[in-house]
Amino acid sequence: MNRAFKYGDAVFETMKVVDGHIPFLDLHLQRLQQSADYLGLDYDEYDLRIIIKTELANFKSGVFRAQVYRGGKSFYIGSNEVEIDMETTAEEGSYELNKDGLNIGLYIENYKATSPLYNLKSANYLLFVMARRYADKHGLDDALIVNGYGNIVEGINSNIVIIKDDKLISPDVDSGPVDGVMLKVLAKIGYKIERRAFDFQEVIDADHIFLCNAVRGVRWVNSFNGIEKSYWPEYPKMVQKLNAACGLKD
Image 1 (cartoon, one colour):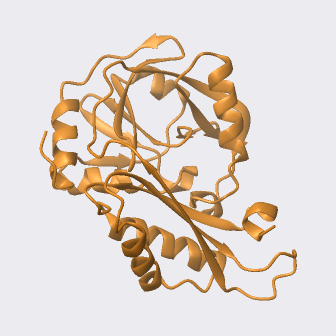
Image 2 (cartoon, helix red, strand yellow):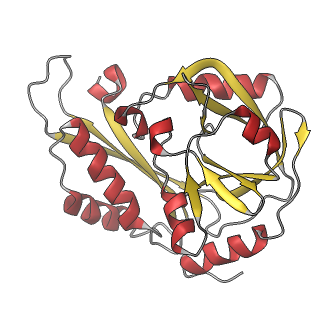
């Protein structure tokens, strides 16, 4: 068994594939490089670019997952050389707005720590597994994670954005979320997002809520803890801009 399986000593990126290429690849590889550097892994981004090109030679649209982990099998770190596992899953390439809004809740049985380690997309995913179990048990589409200060962190596998008085707000990295690629993409296509800490009450008071990640794009929320949230008219235009940024047309 490798160290990724035994100790969670790994980081990964899940990337959307559109017409045989990965949109926003530079942002994904930048985050992966920063994560590997933080863990002290001897990782070469250029090698991964070559591997990705080879892997996607006969793969048109879907999801590509790359996991980078420290070599070796014992707990003793004898080397920081890396190994890479890859996985592809075929599915529709373009971004589509969810027809029915998500019904989400709040997961507070376990908290997410706040330190740079927890901003990484690491193989230690137990908190999110438990949040997923909670959501399934309570008939929810997703659940929000909180930190030890009671502030909102993120969804199960997405960043959260709340909208109040036409201002877009998402938790800052000090609150503990994964530093999302899609948040950076939304900023690039013209959406100003304020990054700061906020708590449960601000989610309740928000006019609109959406979850976002690089694979699913934007998913709007219909209700939070049973409190209805209105549909933001900008959502379709946002998805159009995302598809345009991928080189796609609706």
